[in-house]
Length: 155
Image 1 (cartoon, rainbow, N blue to C red):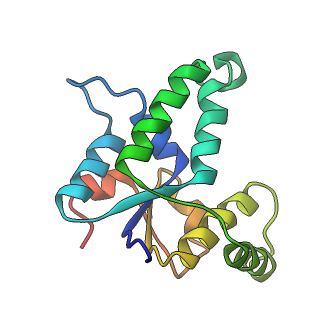
Image 2 (tube, rainbow, N blue to C red):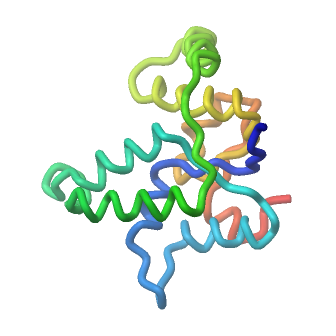
C-alpha cells in the first residue's frame, strides 16, 4: 500500500527544525506545522536523513553543526516517528538517471535530481525547502519556501 504524502521536507528544513526551543520555533518548523494544520501529509527520505546526520555531526569549523552522534540519532528518531520516510528504489534510480541526462545536471544539482526522482516516483508533488531555485528545473514539482507557507501562499 502506497503512502500518500503531499509535501517532502528537504534536508535544509530538517536541519533548521532540529534545534528548536519550545518557546522559539524556527520559520521552518512553523511552516511544517502550518502545512500539517492545513491537512498536508509530510515526509522525507532516507537520503535526506543521511545527509542530515552528515551535516549535523560535522564540526562547526567545517560548516557543520557539531552535534554528537547520539544527539543526531535521537533527532532522526523524532523525524522517523513524525514523518513518512521514503527510500530509493531501482525505479527511482532509473528516473534519477533520466533526470540527470534530460537536464544535463552536474555537481550539487545531481543530488537535487536524486531527491526529485524519489519524490516523482513516490508521487509527492511539493517540497518544502529554503533552496527553491534548486528544484525549479523540475516542472513536475512545486518548491515551497517556508516564508511562502507562512504568508499563506499554499493552496
